[in-house]
Every structure is written in structure tokens, then in C-alpha cells.
Length: 286
Image 1 (spheres, rainbow, N blue to C red):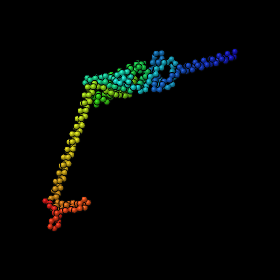
Image 2: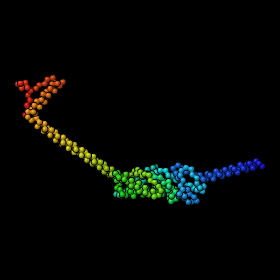
Image 3: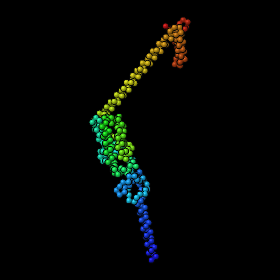
């Protein structure tokens, strides 16, 4: 009898411990790193009590929807293996001059932690398909129509990217999404248009190069003109300084100096110089 009572008490204790464990377990929910937990109680989203990552104690009747707040990338590309959609997913847009261009785009974004419950309540967990993709495509098309094809392809590419970023950032923030960056990765033009643009750009570069060469030649001609003018002026001054007795004396001295240099030169063995009757070197200066 006592043995039965002991067994019954063990069973009762074990059952109570198991029930307590199950109750405690139902109160504890774990949210993975880089995520938040949206609480749903009897079909109603509790917008004011989003759970942070880690261990959380909650109402046992609450259902938990896990939503990532990490940086995510959404790519639309002409290359089938790059984008989220299979096949050619580049955005086709019309430009200001009526040409059709294709643009590859990557959007970096993340969900606002404080807005996760509202996003789930109003949009759902598939907000990427409902918001990110259509908003990005619309922003690109609305921006492309304000620029010429050659501007998008060349000198205003960064400006186009900045305009897309500005437009998309506003749309995202209104819906609880933070836009981190827009990457305009590739622009594809019709073959004839691309060839024409590249030919024009090459011609512009050649024209700029020729302009530089002409400017350089003009500067060189100006330099030579100034140099020639300086030499002529120096010669004029020298010629004036050699007029008169002082000039003749200087030339005689210079003549003798040159003779001495020739005499002392190791390359010469004989130096012949004309002399007058007094054995004075002849030097005619007029």
C-alpha cells in the first residue's frame, strides 16, 4: 500500500513538473539574431510590443511572426542568374529623347525595427514583392524620362542614380523601410544608339585632344617669339657696348684670352696668329 502511494506521489510530482515545464516553455520565445518578433494574439497584431532578438517571455497564446531587420539586397538584372526573378529582369525605360534603355539595379534596404509590426499588419511579410520591387521600377522609369539616353549612359549617370535614390527613399520611409543605397549597375542601349554615342564620345575626345595640341603649339610659338626678342635685344646691347676705345680694348683682351685657351688646350700643338711689324697680334675692330 505504501509502495503504491509512493509511486502515485512520484507520478503526481513528475506530472506537475512536466506541466510546469510546458507552461514555462510556452511563455518563452527565442527571436533569432538580426530579427524581430511580431506578436499576434487571437488574430490581432500587437503593434506596440515588438520582440527583440534573444530570449523573450510572452503570453502563451501569442503567435510569433519573425521578420528580418538585416540589410537585404534586391537585384533586377538582365543576367538570369543575378536577379531575384529568373530570366531577363532588367528595367526597360523610355528616355527623354524617346529611346528605350535597359537598366540593371540593386537596392540595399532593411526593415525599420520600430515599424515591423505595422508593416506586417498593413502589408504582410511579403513586403518585398509588394513594395520594394514595384517602387524601385517606378522610380527608375520616372527618373529616366527626364534625361537623354546619352546622359544616362555617360556624363549624368551618377545624377540619375542620385535621383532614383532620392525618390525611392521617400517611398520606402513612408512604409517603414530604410533605403541604404541604390546601385545603378549596368545600362544597355540599342546597338545602333550605343555605337552612335560611342562614336560621338570618341570624336569629342579627339577634338579635345587636338585643342590641347593647338594650345600647346601656340604657347610654344609665343615662347620662341619671346626668346628671339630677348636674344635680339641682348645682341643690340652687346653691339652698343663694343663701340669706341673701351670696346676695342675689350675685344683685344678677349682675343688674347682665346689664344691662351687654344695654347693650353691638349688638342693643339701649334697656334698661328697674325702679327704686325711690332709683333703685336693683328686685331681689326671697326
